[in-house]
Amino acid sequence: MKALPPDHAHPTPRGGTPEFPSASTNPCKLCTPLGACLAFKGIAGTVPLLHGSQGCATYIRRYLISHFREPVDIASSNFSEDSAVFGGRRNLHHALDNVGRQYHPDLVGVATTCLSETMGENMPMLLGEYHRESAADGLARPPTVHVSTPSYKGTHAEGFNDTVRALVESLALPPRAGLNAPTPPALLPGMVSPADLRHLRDFAAAWQSPVTLVPDYSETLDGGTWSDYERMPTGGTTVTDLRALGRAAVAIECGLVLAGAKATAGTHLARRCEVPLHRLGLPIGLRQTDALSDVFADLTGRPTPLRLAHERARLVDAYVDAHKYLSGRKAIVYGEEDLVASLAIFLAEIGIVPVLCAAGGRSGRLEKAILTNAPELANRIEVREGSDFADIEERITALKPDLLIGSSKGYKLARALDVPLVRCGFPVHDRLGAQRIQLLGYAGTQQLFDRIVNALLEAKQAHSEIGYSYL
Image 1 (tube, one colour):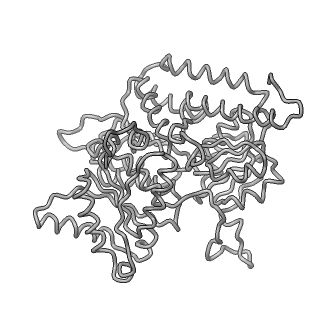
Image 2 (spheres, helix red, strand yellow):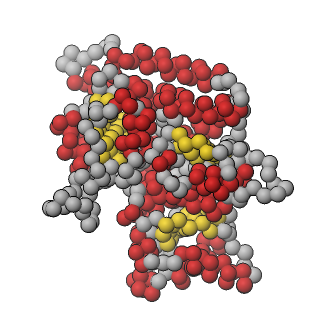
Image 3 (spheres, one colour):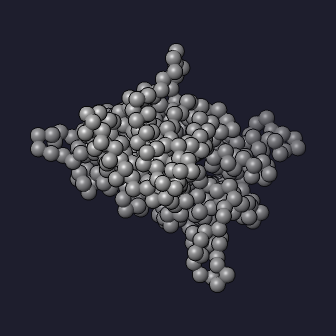
């Protein structure tokens, strides 16, 4: 079935383009500044600061803590009624003073919420005033990076990607005379788990290639125990590393939907700093992980490391072992656009048809991202952008899926359908270990593959009158 246009679910009475989108019910996305806070948590010594109401910071803290099971500090300029009328300049400057005094950060990441965006706060002017006045008073202040994140214009994934771009645009320095030695490849993995970030670093190390992950919250959002509370957990991409990105040997940006965007962190490095750019999908499955391996092979001039070759061989063997359980099965996949695209391509690879691919974003590029890389799915899937769970529920009867793949937000629907839910993406707040869910690389794909197969086998046992001891 051909993908429907973004406004398919809400046509106007006259059949034209609607002036306003209709309200959604439990959408497949979360708010934009949440993604910004997550990206800022991957920069060492950085405090995220929301310029807006206190409630936004509380909401985002609640979501991040329930997923990562780690303490998450997010500052707020704490708008009140008078801020909404007279502007938030005083609140912002006061918040920056407080953050500097209490945290002594290397960087403050400032994201603007719906309220301050709607008010039209002039952030470059306000932040410029703050730094000029501080310098005039002889006060040293940490640098600030601002990202515009009104939730009514995007998703948490877009907030994440826009923040990574803002960090690179603000801090990466182009090569200059006397400072041209290349720095490690920049790996921009997108919104993945801390376990996947660690795996990507190990993947690169297998090729004997260090990388700069941007961002890197593998430790800040999945650390060990502390004897005393740490206001800012150790770990993350340093500001020094970010400044050196302009001299990176190469940039690798993951995200097939993101690859269609005109302005990203990767395109900035390519245009401003002439860093060669590779735009790949999230390395889930053989095809997409092979593409990442090819980049490292070209970069290092080395054959595939034995460890990765063995991981790949075990994955192929697992595909063969389980094909009889998977062939012809149907899945509904939902969540962030780039995750949905890469999962759909992987499912096609193992014989499962992703009959409905639903995302909260509205890039207009999701269908092309899937079918370009998995042409065998043409005319076999529905792709819905700007989707919500009410939208998905409408299609359930006709599609009859065998399983759902996505965040915990699909739990009620999976329960009502009595089909398995394989949890991945964000948020996963009804299970322990979301920060350690691994999807990337041959090893991560192996874990995902086993979870999918076993979920289907468990459902078969549960629904059988006789049960099965051998399957």
